[in-house]
Length: 173
Image (tube, rainbow, N blue to C red):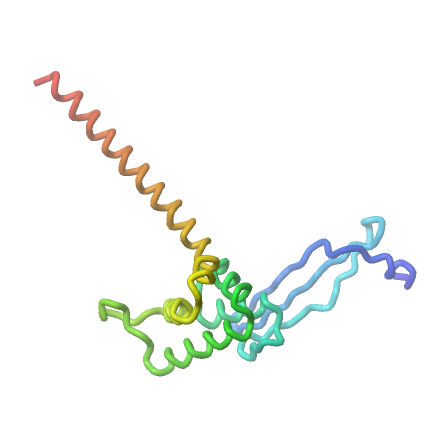
């Protein structure tokens, strides 16, 4: 592309994130050049999750926590990093890894070990204020309420079906 065309680069059209098993993440962005026919691909940004620190962007710190703890609740972890900051989130990650390396933590019943994500969230709940806890866990609470409402509807339908069957049998007797 001629230099005068490169200066006309508009906003980012699309960003793709490629994740690898070893924790390496490569981000690439495609930028649109003025008339929409030409695109400029930016250089990839690489994040090595094994060497994460507070200088990484928020999404990379959250990604490192998700990867290293094998946690599935992405929105929750992103909200933790957003609310508490990178330093505190990484501090909790390192404490969790230390606990896991020393044998882990048992569940309340004592019948099995907690998963690493559960240890992380347990430490998190102990160390944050009620206001932060409400903000971070709002997503989980909403999902829990949604699932509970759905279960309630299903049990109501089952009861209605069973009463319909019984009422149909009564006149026959």
